Amino acid sequence: QVQLVESGGGLVQPGESLTLSCAASGSIFIYTMGWYRQAPEKQRELVATTTSGGRTNYADSVKDRFTISRDSAKNTVYLQMNNLKPEDTAVYYCYAQVLQFATLSNNWGQGTQVTVSS
Image (cartoon, one colour):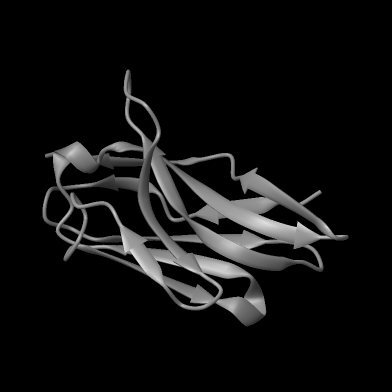
């Protein structure tokens, strides 16, 4: 079973920055890795993803503020979040589409809270 371990959430003021990281364990190949978020009483939504080929995808609401990056050798993905806004407050979930033992699976982390408030 693939484990995704997230870190880096916290409480910040509007305009500040945070970096989230997520490391996947095991001898695996990861196709797509990225971040989703879920605010109270809202559906989970895509924030940003990156593929094994280096293609990235961002939600319109975070373009020009967030940057996703990946260290494939460490099976780790990062999300640099700049100029945070109160509407970015949510639980952020790491996602990885993994190939292991000839089986493709979708995997989620436990979530890390990001709160943006003055």
